[in-house]
Every structure is written in structure tokens, then in C-alpha cells.
Image (tube, rainbow, N blue to C red; front, side, top):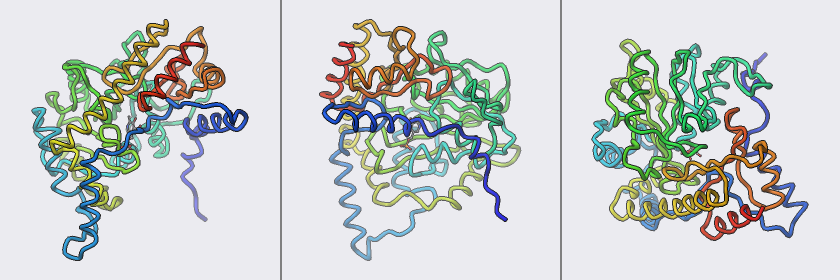
Length: 404
Ligand SMILES: Cc1ncc(COP(=O)(O)O)c(C=O)c1O
């Protein structure tokens, strides 16, 4: 008789965005005349850049002819894309990453969820609190997190690193030593970042205690300040302790197109075994490659035109971020983020809980955001707004919030 993976049964409630979706659908059904604006989900709204579309069209045409048709992609991804990654994302920033250390994938969600496959179930993970929920949930599915304690909204076998106003929404080195440390900067949901010197401390710590850092740099393109690192490999020694995950979703609008990559340096070892060889084995066995058409589209991001056009997209969203941040601050809200990230993290007024503020905003301003408590217990009393809307909707939503 078959048995299920009963770790799944330990997972609490429904996924945060399903709960939000349900509430919004119910509200709209009861109030069909209301124009509800969403600054909730972190999905982009601008179309793909013209250069990217052109590359996709070209690749589609190649598929129509026997001499240019492409079947299965190479395991690690096409060399034209991996070389562009090495040159633009690493060499240009002084990081020496080899082409066979890059693994092209269908995005950062899958990679950050799947990377746990190459680690023993006995490892103890440390996560920021609040946190992008995928890291914790996928470790729970693997049986690495112990039991869920409803009253605390925490797992019994996870090290939580509170990121609060007192720490500038950055984690501090935990008292208990973890084996795997998840870091994400610029951060979702708080929009915070850390400097290169601060990140170097994490690298030094990981090297000292023999931990591995899973560094999610999905929002790297939003960095505007000079002392914020774009890659963990800008730090000395990081190649011996860190895996980096990147996405084309937020820098180039590939949320629906699906493309990302993970870097696993060959220096990163457990005894004599390189994590690169394990991830190569996993990738080759369980993943059959991102589509040629999409990898061609991805490579177009690195052309001069592609860089210019995607930079403009990021700039468009960051204008929204600045607007939200400035206007809400002027209206008396306590806000952070929005400088190196498309997320604004605001303190709920009048000691409302995150969900009370959500309901208040939905019902009285017809604006949807994301309750901070959905990202972890330290997110309680906070609220996330995204800059991914149109200028018009963003302006209208903020005017409404100000009138509350
Ligand atoms: C921190 C973080 N990592 C990864 C992802 C997922 O990226 P992708 O679309 O490449 O799967 C997101 C998406 O919102 C995110 O916020």
C-alpha cells in the first residue's frame, strides 16, 4: 500500500496569495461597482521589451525549419546565454564565475525550492523573518523543519532571524549555528538591503561554521545605491560557501515567460564532493531545460538595446516605488524599502494587525496589499505594497490610502 509524504500534511493553511485572492474575489462579488486596485502580488505589468520580443520571434522562426530547429536544450543551458551571464552579471562586477558553474532554469522559485534536494534532511536551516515563503515551505515538504507550532506561527526546527525596525530589517548572526542560511537581498518582502561589508560578515561566518548560504538575488536589478552588492560573489571567499539564485522575472518581466539561473561554484564542497556535481546531476535528471525560444529571449536582455530597454522598465517601477514611499511618508506613515527594491514596507497605523489593515484598505480604499504577517511572525503589524502597477493605478491607490 502506498504511503504519502506526510510532511505535506504539516503545512499550515492555504498559501498567502490564495487567501488574499479569495478575500478580493468575495469583496468584488459583493461590490461589483467598485474599482479595486492591486498593489499586492509581486507580478510585473509592463510588456516584454521590444528587443526581447524580436529575439523570441526570431527563435520561433528557427523552430519552423529543419536546419535550425532545436530539440532538448543542453543540461546546463545554451552556451550563448551562460556566456552572456558570465560576462555581464559576474565578470563585469569583478566576480570570476566559470560557464560550467551556471545552471539555466525556469526561474528562481523552482531553483530556491529544489536546491534542498542536494542537502541531507538533517541540516538545520536559518531564514529571515519575515521571509519569501518558498524557502520554508519547501524545507517543510522535505521534512527538515520539524513541526508547525500554530500559536507561534513557527516551525520547531527552523532558526528564525528576526528582521525588524530595530535591525534595519536585516538579519543578525543567529545564536544557534545553522547549516543552511537563506538570504535574499534586495529583500522580499521588506525591500531592505545590506551593504557589501555586512554581506562579507555573513560569508566569513558561513566559512567559519561550515554553513552554506543560499543567496536569492532575484531583485538585483533594483539596486540603486553604490555600496549594495549585486552578487554575493563580490565578497571574498563566497565561492566556497554560497549558491546564488537569479531570476529574469523582475528585471525583464519574465514572470510569465519563465527563465532564471543558479550559480553553484566548484569551490563549494562537502569533503571531496562538489555541490556543483550534485546540482548538475539533479538538474540533468529532473529538469529538461528552459525552452530555446526563452533562452534566446533571455540572451537578448544582455544586448545593448536589451540592457537599455529593461533598465527603463525597472526605472518605471522604481518611479512608483519612490512615489509610494514619499507620499506615504509625507502622510505620516512609517515606511521603508522602495530605494533598492520594488517593495514598500509600511508600519500599519493605530496598532492594527496586518490583516486588520488589509481589510480596512480593501473595504475603505479598495486597494489590495499584502499583510506582513503572511511572511512570518515578525511581519505582524506591517504591510507590503508593490511598485509593479501602472503609474496611474499607483497614484490613484496612494491618493485613496491618504484619504483614509
Ligand atoms: C525572493 C524571490 N525569489 C524568487 C521569486 C520567484 O522568481 P521566479 O519568477 O524567477 O520564479 C520571487 C518572486 O516573487 C521572489 O520574491
